[in-house]
Amino acid sequence: MKAPATTAPESVDVTPQQAPLRPAEVVFVALVGMALFHLAFQEVALHGLGLGWLSCLFLLRRTACGRWAFYTGLAVGLGIYGPQLHFFWGLFGPAAVVLWLVLAFWLALFLLLLHGVDRYWGTGWAVALAPVLWLGLECFRSELYYLRFSWLTAGSVVPPGTWPAAFTTLGVYGIGALFMLGGAGLGVLIERCWGRCTASPRCRLGALPGLAVLAFLLWLPARLAPKPDPADATNPTVSLAGVQLEFPKEAEVLAHLDQVLEQHPRAELVLLGEYTFDGPPPEAVRDWCRRTGRWLVAGGKDPIPGGGFYNTAFVLSPEGEVVFRQAKSVPIQFFQDGTPAPRQAVWVWDRGEAAGDPLRVGLAICYDLSYARVLDRLVSQRPDLLLVPALDAVDWGRHQHRLNARMTLVRAAEYRLPIFRVATSGFSQAVGPAGNLLAEGSVPGQGESLAAELRLERRTQAHLPLDRTLAIPAVILTAAMALLLVREQRRGQRVPRTGDQGPRTKDRE
Image (cartoon, rainbow, N blue to C red; front, side, top):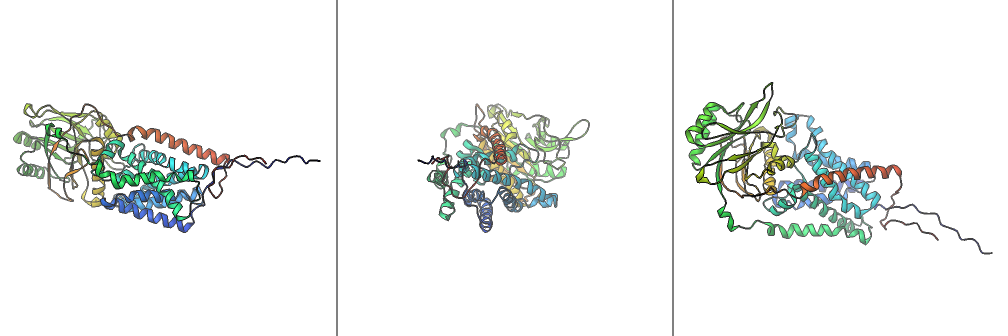
């Protein structure tokens, strides 16, 4: 008698996980990644090491469990943000550790999510989703909540003057996402060479984006450099000057204003830093405008009826009248930095018939320059030029000044706009529309003047990089992925196992 056929037990539908890194390997990869991060931000010529830093971060998704992925991210975050933002300690004391941890949290969350993607869906999905998760988390931590802080993003490691077209097209967050895609692909190659990867050939195709970005780093930057435009000669120019003065007295301001005109007699407008005055510009400074026939833009406090003040950039005409004022949109958290601006507007600068059509000038005060959403609103009004009075206190340190100055180059390249920025103690900058540095002050450089003649590009519509369109969808998709991973974990439908032979199917014997 023929025995009845038996049916093998159905296997669970599983997407496997590769073998996790051992603790010593986690420590090694983390230390290498932190070293590459600091080298990339320290030396302009080494910015390509940013790709290696993100490759190390991608490798760290393979900790033993999600909890350790999160803790590893916190440790790495403290290792990169603490040294780079060491001046926080001088500003906030021991509370600086909390702020470093806040920044490290977003890195830890990225590793936790990437660990979950790799565990439940495999290497291919980890490579594909890494740039999306990175873009969503970088945009949120930089732009969308109270403690937002946009310095030290992956894209800002790239010198804008070297990659102007990339910044104009992709934006700083888009470049960071592209770097993460390349870093993830290279991470797959490293795992393969290291003998830690047993991924299927299909999953190994994730390395291809890494090779593409590597080629982009080595070959395309020179191709992206701006070419001289014969039509540039027909565009208007404006001659500007500025003076670095930190909390000066009125007599000191007047003496340096006279001095800057002696050194730069062609200057049509003089820019002073943030908080040059403790209120509106005094009468003696207005008299200076009348006597010299020059425009002046200076920072001060604009009192609010009922108490408080706006941190304001005042525009004084050659007649000594305040013809325009713009308050700071993002006062610095935990500082007495005024009330946020109720509006943003463009100043229409009529320089007279001999100078041609009026210029449209945007005013952004110091920290405002760090935020894409703030500048996007201003740039949507089609300014020809951005003026930025800034306060960088001498005792904050040279490294803080350099990190803040980096944002000027990024924004100029993103919007294709020239920017003239005067900081109270350096680094003051004149930057061209390709993110190229035309002139720069020193630190502390008290009383030092800066001058530049900027050629402007008239435009009929505002330009915003691609990442501005992708940011909110990436944030929403990142939140959805987090909820989906929580559901997968709770339902326990997918059980990880070692080896990466692709998802098992329900076979019957």
